[in-house]
Amino acid sequence: MTTSEKLPLGVVVERREAANRWADYAWQPVAVIPGAPALDDPHQWRLMREGDDWAHFLVGTLEMELFRGETEGYKFNLSTGQPQVFVVLAPGEEADDPDVVAFLVTACPYEAEKYMESGDQIVEGVPMPPEVEAWVAAFVETHHVDQPFKKRKNKKAYDPRKGGFQRSGPRVPRDGGGGHG
Image: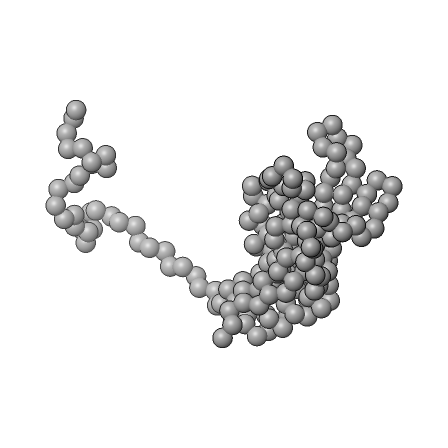
């Protein structure tokens, strides 16, 4: 049985002039394109459209991979009424890299949330195209198994007056030392 499925998605990013003395541009993912072919050269983005102070570029194609163990996240995403594909952009690291690099696309909001913690990446949800939504829904329908809620039982606290807990051997201090030094 297959544990994952993949779908190539082109990543479209908006570059907007920034009114900021530390950065020339602000970057934001704005769309994904199912089945978009890979760019011949990842450093040569494809201009899609532009306006006075903005431009949209196809910056690359990544495979969105669905995993059986993440169906709870996909199911939650689909239930929101406006499912999203979460795009993670990382800063370019090499001198000849673009300002941002498409790093990850995912349908799992929980996975996307992990990338928000560092603050180094740009993480945004973009509208999930209908054909991607149908693909994710079919995957969830096939692989999702509801996990019943299990309330944890409280463990009884150790009470030395009641016995039942015996130490074996002499007590050794945590620092591993045996005496005063």
